[in-house]
Image 1: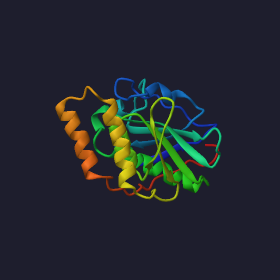
Image 2: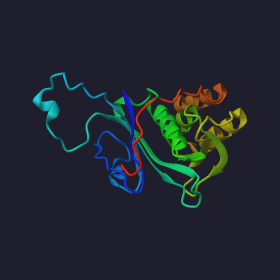
Image 3: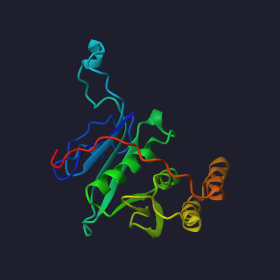
Image 4: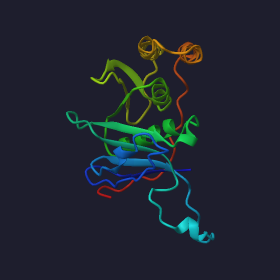
Length: 208
């Protein structure tokens, strides 16, 4: 699997993700946000390819996960990850967390001090912590929990802050069934998850 930064704002590429397979697919057609992807490793030029593999399709093929990002509107030293999406058949493999860690590394390379993401569900919250982010104790106006990390290294781990975030989700989800509630409680009891190693990958050159 390749991790690649496709481009940075304001001249970033667009992605045509299959809306049937990716949440937020429509958010990636904008060129105003940077893009990074986890994608299938391309075959070497010496390998044979079938005509079907070379045929153009309606959507960008071979993408397993995508992230979009842009500088914070009021703090140019902070890069905000706007959306992260993982293809429906590859969820639960940790690809989203690794992609987030990759984006943070590329942000550090470009001189950003911090990276921020706001998450709206427990799965995304845990993935952000696996990528080295930490809950900072505040929410957006859309009730998303704000997580942040230094661009060049994982955030300091605070088990109490991590559990506070999960408690906020727990309090909102009054209609959780027994299995979902048990999974959330297990995440809380386990504490912050291990941080993934950031993948090595390719970063787009300025203006590309």
